[in-house]
Length: 120
Image 1 (cartoon, rainbow, N blue to C red):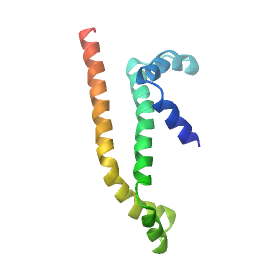
Image 2 (cartoon, one colour; image 1 turned 90 degrees about the vertical axis):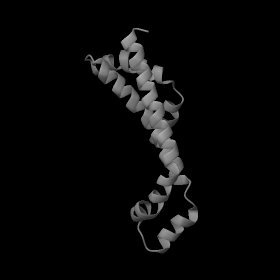
Image 3 (cartoon, one colour; image 1 turned 45 degrees about the vertical axis):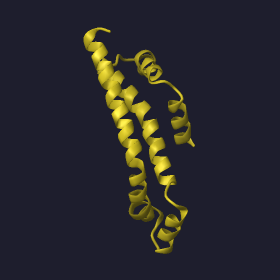
């Protein structure tokens, strides 16, 4: 339940809002100043973790139920079934979305760096 709330909340909030919160609210909460790099890094990590969590969840759910049952029938524990049966198949389904998400993150960071360097 907490993970679902986290993912749903941060996927519904624009990145600039998360950066704003980290810049203005977190220093008040922590009662200390945060360097600019720390603010940007924390905001990107918090924001992207929600998207990556959703990609992983969808990848795991994309594996057919029969595969889970087959792992159980082989006598594998839940964690063994996840490690040896479910995750290898899920990873294949996750790769396109993960690559896309990392490209978007990389482009966002380049755009912000370019704006900062050129004073835009």
